[in-house]
Length: 118
Image (cartoon, rainbow, N blue to C red; front, side):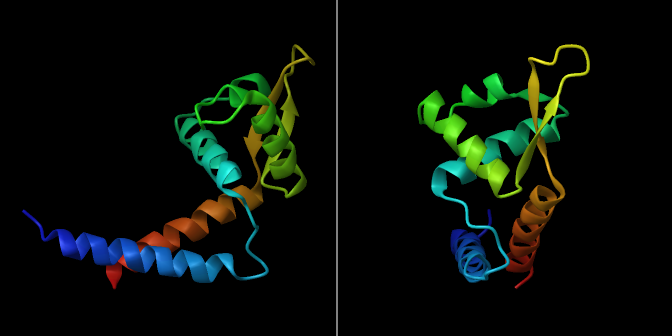
């Protein structure tokens, strides 16, 4: 079995890297609810699921649907998500990642990778 202190040290290095990255003016500021929402959306996007606004508002991130809707609007204004209208039913809007979303998660992934290498 591996030494748990090794993994603890890796996680702490990751947290330190993230704190440094988040303090950069070029890194988008997201509050904890927005971060949980983005993580939940990313898990669905990774599986190839197209997420409607209504589905996003029902995600289990421990806040009300109204709060999730406000955070979706906030993430949209920050350029971290966009809305795409369904081709056959214009009432349906999908929440889709943007290039900035890919950069955001890419930065997180690089921090995790760097923490594991150290």
